[in-house]
Image 1 (cartoon, rainbow, N blue to C red):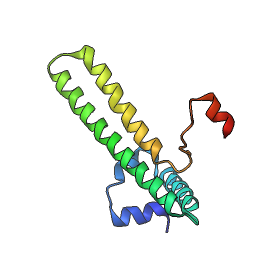
Image 2: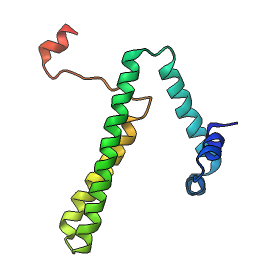
Image 3: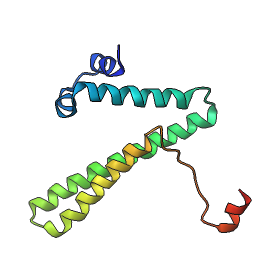
Length: 122
């Protein structure tokens, strides 16, 4: 049973996504993300668990900001302040994208020092 079938059985409500991209494409994506997360947690220790806990906290914060910006966009649009709706819509989409990218197992999030001397020591 593919990961998508397990998700549909457990949670349901994926029909709209299946209609948009097709079941085969969605199954392939779910299996690929699941395999990436499995390889990420293979032999993971305490630090890896803390890192993913922080990733989920950060992603939740960004998704909440995204919904707040979208609500603000709808409110501004109702008051005919269309010059401001562009910015709030942009920040809503940006925060939603950043939230999704943060939870992608293929992107390694590491802090890079802006100090050139610190980079040489690494």
